[in-house]
Image 1 (cartoon, rainbow, N blue to C red):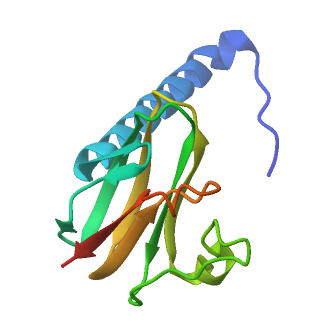
Image 2 (cartoon, rainbow, N blue to C red):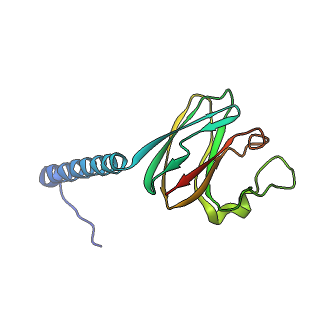
Image 3 (cartoon, helix red, strand yellow):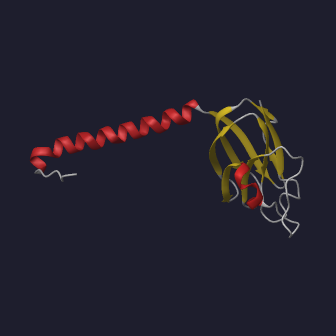
Length: 147
């Protein structure tokens, strides 16, 4: 690609218009995408995850609020077996064995935070859980059925 060279007096307006067009297109594109996805509320607290028990398949945004006094993460996995595999520590789920079933992850976040996780869910059974040490065993998980 050849570099474009011009004086500001010759192409400043053109460059400014191009930047403006990119900014407007970028803002519009992101906004449309977020607006077209369904938003589903999920609440994390000690030691519980509250979310719908059933949803329709498709693109959606999990809007996750941490109401607990400590940080929490959120993992979403599609799985058909009744129980998740545990690590040898007995306190956490074996995430490595679930990687191929993982639909989305939110890293740990502080109390009071609100985060969005965009996912596309196909029909099946999903588990939403926090895998911080002891949190899963303390009840920080819920099952979601997608039809």
